[in-house]
Length: 123
Image (cartoon, rainbow, N blue to C red; front, side, top):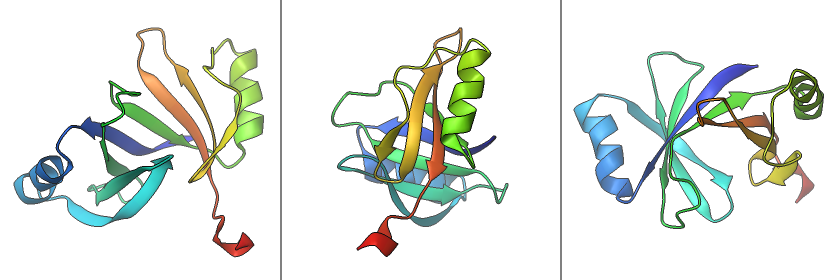
């Protein structure tokens, strides 16, 4: 597993993206739906493997930032982490961007274990 996306939730998507793009120099590189009906704006960081995902927090489901861990096999990593004592909020479930399961660390920070999948070839 590795960190791939760091989410930043905001009430003003345009202002937040402008802050990262114009203020900090991060390049806008695309959009992705990590959550149903919530489009994220992706920004490229200086690490080519890590992106910032700015998400409009209009549903108030998420109040804190979320670290997204990339997984090549979500089910296998899910079971290995559970055996190691990690407490998950849910079993792996299908999300618009792939298969994922959420958990937190002892300090209450939120994580999404994500196996990205492309569903376009099924259409």
